[in-house]
Length: 88
Picture 1 (cartoon, rainbow, N blue to C red):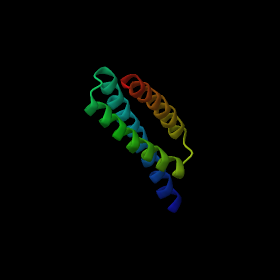
Picture 2 (cartoon, rainbow, N blue to C red):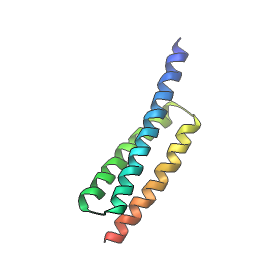
Picture 3 (cartoon, rainbow, N blue to C red):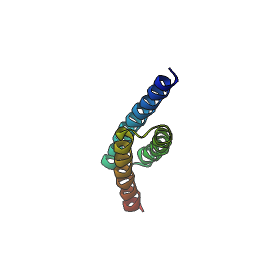
């Protein structure tokens, strides 16, 4: 039974990381579309939360969903980074 709980917890963490990545994508897209200081800050805040969610999932599981979340996280970081560079 302990194994089932661990498996359920791992899949929940992967789902949370996936959801967080989706929210990050939307936040970055909004900031890219309309690069106001407020939207860029919201995207940066979302990035921190997403990194934490993905890190938590990485520590608990090896599911391929975490790898996908890591890839999307990396892409969104690049998008946000390029936005920050263009604003300077």
